[in-house]
Image (cartoon, rainbow, N blue to C red; front, side, top):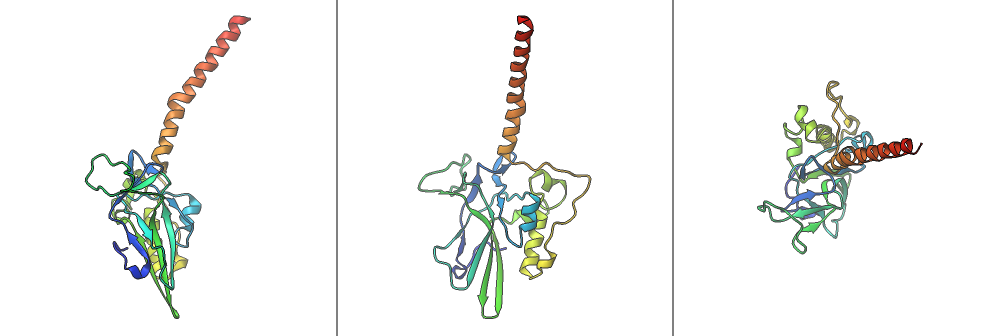
Length: 215
């Protein structure tokens, strides 16, 4: 993982922080839960519908013209309701037209460069915290929406080493069964259980009362 990438590879890590209002964990839009795209690194994660979270991630953009011999594959992508906040000191971040960039963004890329019979591989991630002990071990990672962070990191290392056969999803503790949902999904569940279902029950009760009174 690298913070800045040579122009020879055709990608750049932005001097910003990604805020995703469409897919984030808990109450923190600064912790995106990106879509996992299909690649050798991520295919098992995508098929198992595991989530990863990248707190305080930077945006990664591709150059308009890719260098010769370089192939770029996105691994993680934010929703269309995301933006790259350039004012890193503001306590109330908001999208500023003409200053901030609108998403979706890549948060991780896999790069390969062919030079004759040799192939060079690089993985670029807009956040280093996702692989830290806090985000990749124990109950904390599960509570932070990063159930797949460990697998993602190890799969990246295996892919970089050319050990695709080792890419997999590791066994999880049987006593921990997290419900991995994003902030917007939690809001929908809250709305359904706190408002929709009670209203339907009230309406049904009124209907039954009216029917019985009419008899």
